[in-house]
Image (cartoon, rainbow, N blue to C red):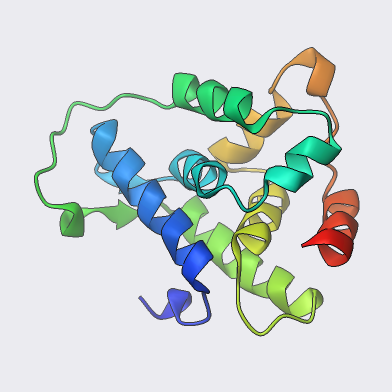
Length: 150
C-alpha cells in the first residue's frame, strides 16, 4: 500500500498491531478503532497519555472493550481491507508529519491523525473515554506536546 511508504518502523508496527486486532476480533475490515489499539500497544505515545494523567494500560483495556466482535474468522491476514475512515486517518497522519517537519510518519502522527478524524470510531472512543478524561485530547495541544517531547 503506497500510503505506508513514508511510515517509520514504529508506525508500521502500529499498523500491524491494528491488523492483528482486526483478526483477533474477527473483523474483516481494519477500522480506526483497531488502529487506535495498535498505536496504544506500540507504546511510543505513552508520554502523551502520561502528560494527560492517563494510564496507557487503562486506555488499551477501554478500547479493547469497545471493539465490535465480528463473526468472520480470518485465517489469512492478507485478506483484510481498510475502512474509508482508516484510510482518511492515514492521509491525515501524513499531513501531520509534514506539519511537524518530519520526513517519516511515526505513531505520534498516527495518533494526531486519529484526533483529526472526528468521524472515526477511534475518535469517538477517545471522546467518550470517561467523564474524568473528557476534552483532554485536543488536537492543537497534542500537536504542541509531540513537537516538544517526541
